[in-house]
Length: 279
Image 1 (cartoon, rainbow, N blue to C red):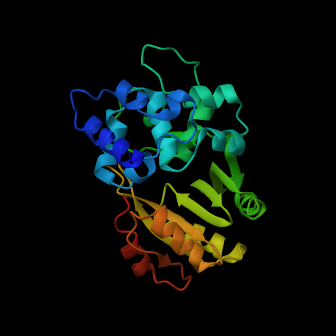
Image 2: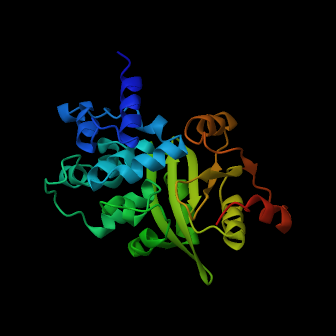
């Protein structure tokens, strides 16, 4: 039996309101009920289809189930979250608990929900509520004041985390008169930076900050989102090895159309054109 195909077919039935596939049955279809860590084989490839992924996220009502799907979509398992965040077994267990809506789970703190939501490119609604809409807002970054840093500290974090197998965290970076809302991820030396509140001025600020203070060549891309009011995330990727960057583009960012090389000499009109699909 092809497990991936079987689970993908079941997921498609779930989002199409098949009479025999409820949310509870869909969850119980997975080996996680038997204690297996890597049971959600279909979620990451399923999330590559924007239409199907948005339906799955919106149709899933139990917050623990939806958080599990969101984590799997960016390759974060239970053990990854424990290792990366330092959260204990009970915290991660309750955060990702897949169970019937009638079963109670311990209340997860606002700070943890905020950090987790940024990690999975979600919203506060998606990681907290039973019923959700697909509108993007910056509430999560307002909830992580404890992760507010300056530009120098931001660069230090990037460089000091290069040796880690994986680093992923949300930051608010203070710059003169403004802030950068940052999702920073480092995987085996590849640096991935989401600028969540992107506009032309902040694009220039972050581009200059990275090209002047890190040893990488930088590129950026537009990663489509499932949010009606935000067409794409603006993501910077830096690495000295083009093969690793191409691998990332083809595997994790297959939604993206192309890379754009960051050139400090780019004209303002060129930047405006390249950022046209950001809302």
